[in-house]
Structure formats: C-alpha cells, structure tokens
Picture: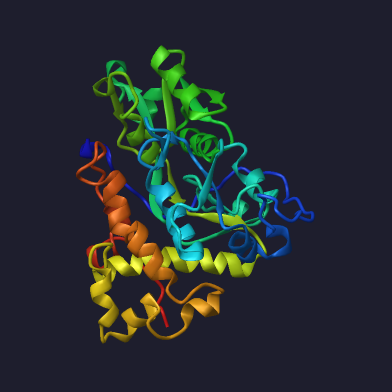
Length: 352
C-alpha cells in the first residue's frame, strides 16, 4: 500500500472547545490535579497514569481480540508510565471520542491525551492544551471507492463527504475544496466506526481524515482493495501528546520522555542492548540513561526515567516498527517521521 503514503509537516487550524474546568480533587480520586499544577505528584501518589487514547484506530490506538490496548500512541502512554512510575503497565486507558477528548483533559479525567491529536494554534490557546513534541507528522487525505473513478479533489463535485465530529478535518475540507471551487455536502459522525459503516454502506461518497487514519482503515474495511486514497494532501497534521495548560512540571516531564525515546534511537539504544550502554564513556549517553547528571531529578523524576521507558517499551523506531513498520499490515514508510539524519523531522533536544 506504499503508493498511498505522502506526508507533510506543520500545523492546521482546529475547532475550539470550552475553557478548562477547575476545582479541587479529592484524595484517592482517579482524576489528575492538573488545575492545581501538580499532576506529576498526583500520578506518582496514585501509582497509575490515566491516559486518553483512541480505541478505534488500528496501528495507533485499538483494542485487540484479547481486549488489550495496542498501538503507536498506546505505547507512548506505556513509556510515560514506565518513566514516571517504573512500570509500563501502570496505565488506566480511557477511550475517548474526538469530541470529548479535550474535555477529559480539562476536567482532569485523564493526565495526558495520546489520541492522534493535531497540534494547532487554537488548541494551544483557546482550548487550553499544552503539547509535548510531535510524535507523528501527518497530513489529511481523502478515501474514495475505486469504482467511483475519482483521482482528484476536483472530481468530488456534488458528492457527500463524511467527517468525524470534533476534528480539524471539516474546516480543512472547507478551506481546500472552497479554494478549488468544489461544491459538496458534509455528513458528520460521532465516531470513526459509524463513519466507516456509512462509507461502506454507500450512504456517503468519500471520507476524509489524517492519512494515517485512512491507512489504518484498510485493516478493518471488508474489501480494502476496493478503495483508494487520493494523492492530494489537504493539510498539515502534526500529532502530539497533550496535557492541560499551566502545569509546567508535568508538561516538561512528558516532553523529555518523548525526547528520550527519539534520542535513544539516534544513539542506537534499544530494549535489547540498553544495558550495554550503561558503561558507555559518552557523557551524552550517561546523562540520558541517568548514570550521571541528575537530569531526572531536575524534572521531578527518577534519574533513570529514560532507562525505564526505553528498556520496558523501546526507542522511537522500535515503537514505530512494532505498530506501523515493514513487518505490519500497514508497512507505513517513516518519511518525515524518520530521524533528522535520515532526512526526517524527528529530532531530540540535547540531554544536558
């Protein structure tokens, strides 16, 4: 399916939701105390991370046949739990729709949102999110049935296009098709499963979302070979973890956990060989793994936080390959998600 994949970087304009809620959190509650700026301590005291994820997106956030959460975003949640709590399994996964995801962060229902969420101006301001580094650079695409004979966006004239409520896709669609002078109808759906069901039933002519989401759908479509993804990319969709605005310590912790996974791949540190690097004479590696430097303590974490995340979950490349790489049904090229020295955009800030 590699012919379908073309990626762009950047950010897109998004919908705005209600302002963040505030209030005290009772002792023993499963909520985060994000409104009081003390999420890290709350998570540590609770002994469990509350993570908002997708449960309908194979490859990124999905519940498998054994009832287990799996996927690229899910593993980043596990890495955060490993780094903060020393246990990658200490995660309470909360499945969220696109429409309810920000409210779950605002009310403290989840500590971190890892649900294929685009980093945009309005979400970073009006909606009240703070974003960690981009974990997946994506772009919005369009899927149509092969039988429709459509190869360009202009050929969508007069058609009904499905979008999921609470996402950036509807505005991006209006911007791009409006610029082309294409008239179309929009039908919105509360969740991805309902959208896909309508598409396969033929009640909508096409549907649009991030290209990664379109690729993911091939795993669940009844006859995947009957559908294509158009070549045009409608927008930039940088996907990143999000936390509630104003809790700098928690945002810093999540940020540097993400960077640790990227930096580990650059150093060639994997789950299998990480112990071999503990005796490295490279000071950058020593600081990353917590052998010296005390960087974890500066963040409110144990000094070996990166060691725990990498040893229990893997580096960025391992996570990518496990869920999206050449040995998966998606075989999704790294493209802009390759390390910077390989021509991609993934780049860690220095551990010093």
